[in-house]
Length: 509
Image 1 (cartoon, rainbow, N blue to C red):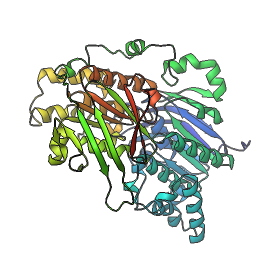
Image 2 (cartoon, rainbow, N blue to C red; image 1 turned 180 degrees about the horizontal axis):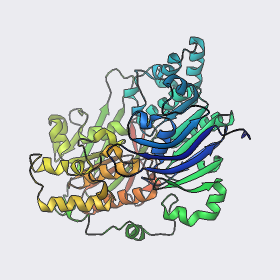
Image 3 (cartoon, rainbow, N blue to C red; image 1 turned 60 degrees about the vertical axis):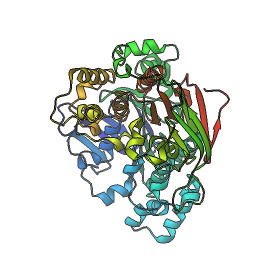
Image 4 (cartoon, rainbow, N blue to C red; image 1 turned 180 degrees about the vertical axis):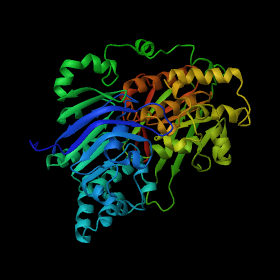
């Protein structure tokens, strides 16, 4: 319940500038949050949502440097300078990438880590473990190592670890981004119960969904400033058109061509990178009798999988967390060594090829783009693959044709002005677009995208979908792993993995 007491959290005139940046990511944010309130922060990609969450939880400027101006107070404590133990006893926080939050070995160890450091009694830690593993459907993997889990299982483990601290304030940045529909319901139920028990909750999202109507108040961010603020039903009633224009709500009445025009997308901009794509009549990849088991596992991650991907088709791959989706995509891309006589490319058994040969004809977008950066700037990241394909020395100039193509792609993604920034400094949606641009800049027969729409606004999704369709039109095969098939309308087929076995839907969404 809300109270009339002093605000639990206060921000006054807060601005923030990242290190080595000449522009503010947050600009004069003033905000009061009362004890027991559920505040949701919504904004399109690059609006400053994650930065605001990290300023509130004290990570900025404590961890990443930069300059914070203004005042942040949780009671009498400044999270930016408070002693870590005191901060952890009052506040829990979870970012978009669960791997950045996990610190120890097994699921059980991870959940117990925080309470143990706060010297919680062993019996109480045991009770919290039992309650949280049951509530977040982690009983079956309680003793498994976190690096062996699926992305959704790791996200639920990271959330359980935060809840195990029993904080007064909980800050969650896209808490359900990597979860299947059942997992999203579980997480929503857990955080709603936590909030109803008296906790103060702050969540951040790139899209307006049905969860928004459960919160007490919404703040809409745009270019680092608070644009709108109020109860969700009031904002939806009075500002629907503006929210659609910001790509926070979907454009039900706007065509893709109109969206592309809004985003200054020129058809010629992304045409050239695919100009040399050949149309092959043979399958791009053929999978037969594929069974795969990780060392020490009790059951196979994939069981008798058969799959053919043809040139010029876009296929969706769905399934619950832990069903084997990432395992299949890593085998197809060559990141995992496949069993003999199970995966064929150009009539060749990929198990007999080196990892370099297996990966040469495949573009792979990781679920979390931070895991694939190799360069210091957006520009160098964008052209890294081109330089490698041309065997250029780092000091060699890039040929004009490729330089122009790279600039056009970055302009299309809205990142040309960020070309000298670090990829790590981008927002979640901007990172996804940069990762896509890096891969789509070079023509390949097969593109694999692992949850490309996760935590992205509708404009980012539309741009990603446009790149996908361009590649398909030029003869590539695309496999898109997603928990939200409705975002990728027009797919040719939809496949579902259930406990490692592949099922094909009667028709795509």
